[in-house]
Length: 340
Image (cartoon, rainbow, N blue to C red):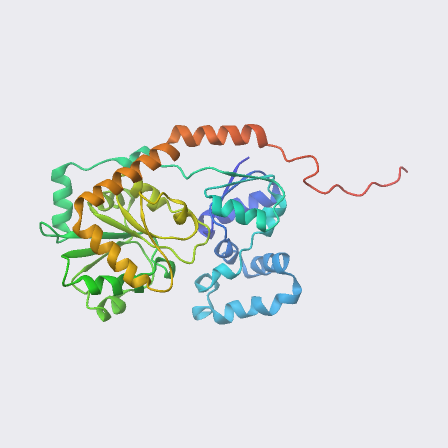
């Protein structure tokens, strides 16, 4: 059995339970499983915390609840402090991850089995293009005029998306570029921060979007803003989808995003002059349609070469066919007992 484990308790808690009962190869989608474990019962989270960190750090477990908004551990602001990976590292005979960064981390954490990197799959449907008429209709419905640039951010709205930096950069561009920012996804309310930067007329918030609507909106975007820091070791499905469509993007030079080809995305660092670098990237791509097109072509070519269904399927067949069983000495054997 192959287990798909990620950092979402709604989708992965039952999988985690099955894995504990019958360990097998794991596709690890995140290098931090804090939220998965926090979504268990309080007793379940305590059990896993003690297994991962020992009784000497029990005070930290109590501090997590104290430091969480409304004492809700699923809203804890520093999940990267607690990876909660020990069960997976101890029991999985094979780990499949989506980035070289995460593979290296697994080895640093002491994992003794086989680690394989298989790119995240790009579904053919993610490449579906809208007709010119449909595209124009979508942009008009969003309130765009001819010549406006549409920036986009997709997925859960969280602190890792760097929205304070995004808003600060866009505020600097108001006199230089006609634009709107489309934010598609659920999360904390951004209205106050948007207003504080004078962007009330420039930001479109849709909330949750169904898959068909998600794709339609993604297809209307000119530049994706895909910042992500700190990373939980994840690979972004939204980023893969956008690149499969030939969409240029600005990403954080960190984790999996930092592994993407330099000609396929525009990378910026964290800290220092992050806002200044982001402003330059958005202004340059916003004004230069030919550069956007070239970056989009490079992005699509990269996804075609790494994440097409046939390529990804072959990698899974190769790995699972040769690594379905752990090495003979992977699990400790019980001590021998004398014959009666």
